Image 1 (tube, one colour):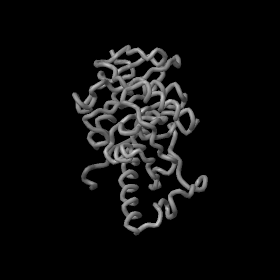
Image 2 (spheres, one colour; image 1 turned 60 degrees about the vertical axis):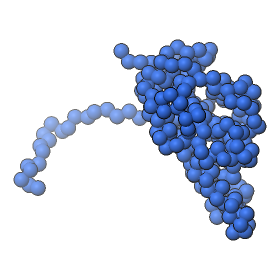
Image 3 (cartoon, one colour; image 1 turned 135 degrees about the vertical axis):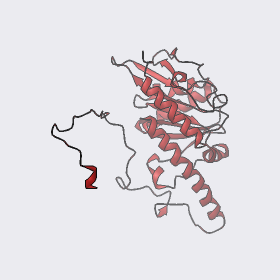
Length: 257
């Protein structure tokens, strides 16, 4: 018998391991979840267990991806315990129905900006569609205060919450997106942006740049609508089916080669 949401849990377990191997979080933690639905439209949250990084180095079996009731937020399947940061994920999902993935990490280059208390300059073309990369006020990790700060910040940006990143002061990064793989892409490109923005700040301090640059101009100048490719939204899944070869099909004679 197959597990509940076996395919989706395997995908999440694989993605989390890849993100850890690429140093997009560290042994101090991080967590990731996706929102899925059954055939009746009932919501469920698939989420990594507590100590995902510290104990398992993110090498998770699909059975360790927890299945959480999307209404009560009670665990109903999976090997392991819920992380205390479930409150942050719950607040995000209840803020906007288009949020289908929440990704919290301690990515190294982005942590520089998070711990500085500064907003991250958005300078790379791959991240421009994210707009401002804001640093939220500090609150202790796993606290209700932090979860509420994230919820309030997401509420203020409306539909932008469907593809967004916030820096969590001294704690890390939280990404909300429409899709697991879009969230992974956002973090990967955010890390490049974090490093490049830092280097541009140094160049500006040295007098080699008058202002930080993005797409050939001052990074504060808004991009024209439609001038950048938008972050793609997931469409309907296309499934492949086997098709028979023609009945009279004959393989070429090996001597002809």
